[in-house]
Image (tube, rainbow, N blue to C red; front, side, top):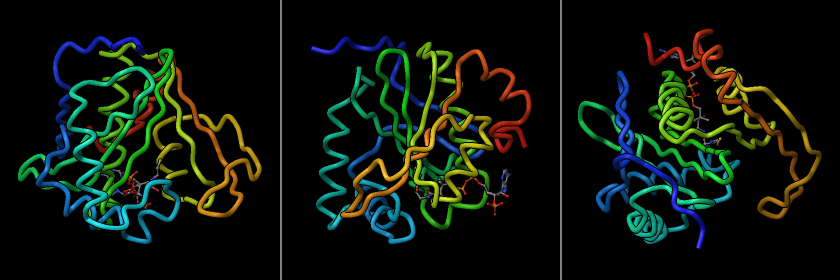
Length: 197
Ligand SMILES: CC(C)(COP(=O)(O)OP(=O)(O)OC[C@H]1O[C@@H](n2cnc3c(N)ncnc32)[C@H](O)[C@@H]1OP(=O)(O)O)[C@@H](O)C(=O)NCCC(=O)NCCS
């Protein structure tokens, strides 16, 4: 049985424009629509083929009320005012290190919202969860994602050549990392600046 992670209360983060909280049954259609969009899922492992896949994904997540060691914990990204689902963000904490991934619906992209969501998530992971390091893995052809991780003040730490078998092809994997000790400086230099605009 993996150790349970200590969380004071259900994870809910509010920023200037967003609310990050639990995925709900009623989110399935919106989630399916953007997650199945070819432009959105091009570099992602999970691609729902039907609405039922999105419903199952949300159902599985509903069983998890708090993050647990080594398990992906997926949160909704909502418009703060009307609660509409505009994306999702997930993380997996193991041995005080958190891997994360983020997806926005096409209409929500290009507005600095991913930075705003990550700014809140990093603050929570380094603060509330006390993680030592956050990291993410990205296909180097995924330019918006590479730009996002750089904008968050993360360091490119590795570029593995054709190290992943992905939807039938060998692809490169670039790893970005950021330490808890580096976050105050990165945040001070404007990482996730949208949060303060
Ligand atoms: C990766 C992904 C979340 C990035 O989304 P994004 O909206 O480009 O990211 P950001 O929040 O950093 O927004 C940056 C853009 O918003 C613009 N912007 C507009 N208003 C802004 C503001 N107030 N603050 C900051 N940037 C702002 C920036 O200029 C930039 O646009 P540009 O790329 O044309 O220069 C998105 O491309 C996506 O969902 N991709 C598909 C899923 C995926 O591959 N995920 C990767 C898993 S890690």
